[in-house]
Length: 75
Image 1 (cartoon, rainbow, N blue to C red):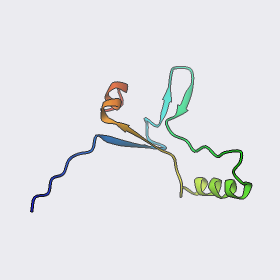
Image 2: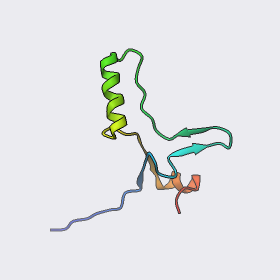
Image 3: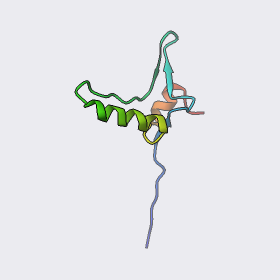
């Protein structure tokens, strides 16, 4: 049996990682966020917010190694 594996070029950036916040020198923004629609029922918003606060749900971003190199993030 032959098993072939390859290294993924996709990297995950998590909240709290140094490269999670992007800046243009004046403004800062997170690479990923969670958007809750105005139409979302209040009880569900409360549940989502509680999950975020407890760390059960968190924003992550995916970026390729090429994008990281171009952005100067890969060291």
